[in-house]
Each structure stands twice: as C-alpha cells, then as structure tokens.
Image 1 (tube, rainbow, N blue to C red):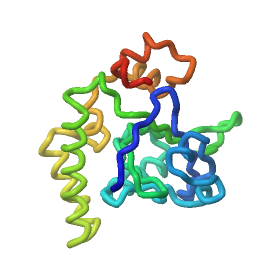
Image 2: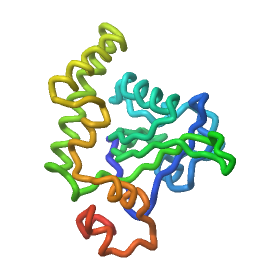
Image 3: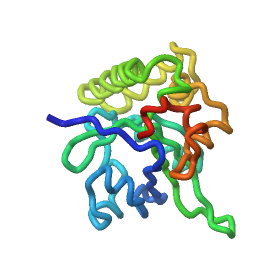
Image 4: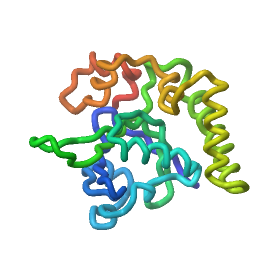
Amino acid sequence: MNKELSLDIRKTATVKINLSNRIDYANDYILELLGYRITEFVTHPPKIICHEDMPDIIHDIIGTYIMNYDEGIAVLKHKTKNNDYFWAFTHYKPSYKPDGSFEAFVTRRKPLPTKKLNGTIEDMKYQISKLYEILKGIEKHTGTKQAERYLEGFLEYKGFDTLEDYYMSFFDFNKAELEEYFSINEQTPDKKIRRYTNFIDIY
C-alpha cells in the first residue's frame, strides 16, 4: 500500500531546472524524500517525480511559465522512487547569475500549510484532486488540447484569470508572507512558524 509522506516545515525540497527542462541540481532533502541518488536524478526531466494522478496539461502550463521566465505557485502531487507520494506547496522562479544572465529555474517545495488556509487541507486536496482527475480523463480520451480548453472554461467559470489564481484561492498569503514561508529553515523561531502551521506539525 502506497503511503502519503509528510514534509518537514523546517526543510525546503529544492530542484533547479534548466531551459531544456532538465534537472541540473537537487538538494539532499528532496533526494531523501524521493529515494533517488543524485546520479539517478540529475539530467532527467522533472516529470520523473510526477505522480500519475497529475495531468500533463498542468505541467505544460508550468513549463510555459519557465520558458517565459515567470514566477509562480502550484500545488503538486509527487511520487517517490518506491511509489509513495506527497503533496507540495511549490514555488518556482528564475534564478540569475551576478552578471544578470539566466542561471536556472528554482523550484522550492514546502508542506501544505495548516494555517493561512481558506478551508481545510483535506478539502483543498479533494477539490484539486477532482480537477486533476477530470483533466486526466479528458487527456486520455480526447487529448491534451481538449483538457486545456476544459481548464480554461473551468477557470473562467470559477472567476480566475490563471491557474495560479486558482491555487492561491485556497490560501491567505500576501507576497511578504509567501516569501517568509518558503524561507523557513532550521533556525526559524517556532513563534514565526506558528503563523503558518499548527505547532504540533513542526515536529
């Protein structure tokens, strides 16, 4: 039976992706989570960690953000090498060298916060999973283009301009809080972490 893993709030699962959509770097924490050695992981496309529940169109949209050097947020379901899984609140943005030239696209993954939520985590997972299931079914029967058209109609009906707006509707973050959340590390005081997650969840 595959199990759902919990992410450590004090750690950040980080991956760097180049413009050829290949993994250039992964930190120790995400390799530990996934069960891969670094030699098994780098140079692969990031879909190596995509859970089979994830529709292709979602990753196509994120890929478009990457190619356009845009910053974004997503709620993604990942699978490990032994087919366990975890949900991640994911932030992706371009990284630049000191001379201003593009270096890589950095993706940072944190647990879904138990505070700063408009509702509950289980409700959010249910709603997002339901959308992904519909998109997967459309992709299977009529292809990715039709899934894209359905998603456009879904977002319009729900009142969102973009997929990121839909994801962020589940949360109550301002820009400063969002950066603070993704910057939490082992030195972050418990008091600050309590703003985003129930105290019991950080141990």
